[in-house]
Each structure stands twice: as C-alpha cells, then as structure tokens.
Length: 79
Image 1 (cartoon, rainbow, N blue to C red):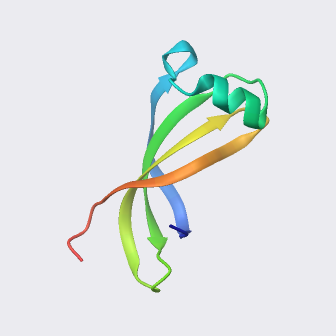
Image 2 (image 1 turned 30 degrees about the horizontal axis):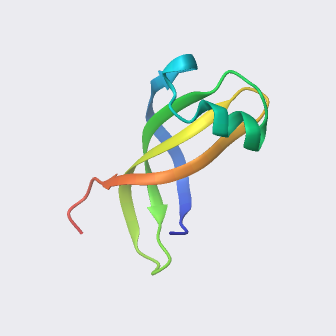
C-alpha cells in the first residue's frame, strides 16, 4: 500500500534494537551494516484514495542510512 506522510511523526518510541531485531540480518544485507532500531510513532498520512487518516507507523531506522520499510500498523481515527 502506497501512502504519503503529511506533516511530521509524533510520539516516536524505540520498540527494539540490536540483537532483539528479528530481521537484523535482512536489514544488513539489504541496506548495510549499522545499529538498526525498530521505531513506532503516530502521523497523518494521505492514502491513495486521497483520504487523510491518523495512523500508527512502524519503521526500521539506522544512523547514516535513514528510515526504511515504513508500514501502517493501525488506524487511530474512526473513518
């Protein structure tokens, strides 16, 4: 599902880091060796239909590499 983040991400927390990441070997092979962390946060996104929704996002991020594998975990509004 393609979506666009509108504005900034808020309430960002670390879910897992280092050896606690299940797909750490995949991230290293695909994007490079770095201290990877799994993060979650809330944001407003624009869906392909044009609708704006408040969502909880999960992503992987590493210093020097950036944010990768962004996905919507759940919708926070009642639309």
